[in-house]
Image (cartoon, rainbow, N blue to C red):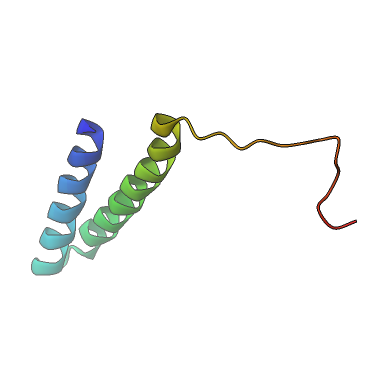
Length: 65
């Protein structure tokens, strides 16, 4: 969870700096990318921590035959 908080704070800070300083829109872009990575990390972490696994039944075949 520490990684999530670090990415969140860094992303918000870079977006704020990139939006407020002229000539540094690339900081805002990097901040947005960090926020996206943060959300992907959180989305991947939730099923892993909860033990959610996708069960696949290979014998029954596709659902619509």
